[in-house]
Image (tube, rainbow, N blue to C red; front, side):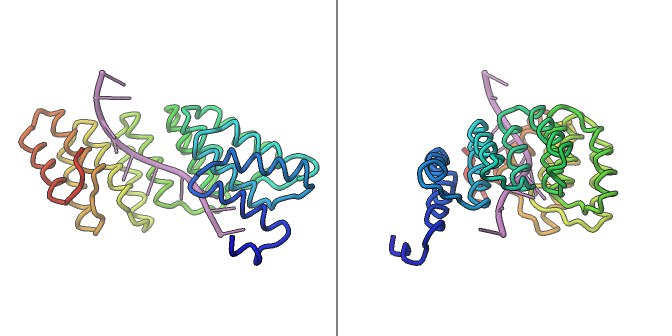
Length: 259
DNA sequence: GTAGGGTTAG
């Protein structure tokens, strides 16, 4: 509270509400303060504060909370603009609670009413939703649209897309997209390598998975517990228990928790 | 100013 002399007027409410959003601590409390502001004090916190609440609720999978804040934002007394930050948070939240169809519906409506010019992050969350529904083929159309809009693709976008192909057992396509990504000069990171390792392990090609594991290490990405879990699983599925155990030992050697 | 991605079972 020592800092309270430095923040004055509306700032103190913003700070307090955002404080309840940090680390998704207690957005419910944040929302009740926001409502007090609007109702009793006639104070309008900033749009950033509304966004923080929506993100915090979505991260905690409380979508009714997120939507409630969104409605307050749209209120004629507030009229804060809808943006990509809010949209991607909500799409991701709907995916987290296993409702990708609601995520897609939400996105389509936002675009239809002209409230949104999507960016790569928002499109990436949409790709997740499509892939959850096995609609990976529709990502190609999306990509065309993005190219027309002049958007650049990145490693997270491709990881999601590749994941979708593995989910449908489309290994060739996954590999092809991986090649495309490399061609574009997009560097793979730990997660994108792990997606490849896991994809091949699950589909019964643990040898190829190990190949990517080595490539990953060569390129300076450190495999983690998730990566090795996929390798162990791949060997176990093929009954290659010696190899599975060797991979398991690598986890121990790296000082990672194996439980 | 903030956001998006990976594993495990039953």
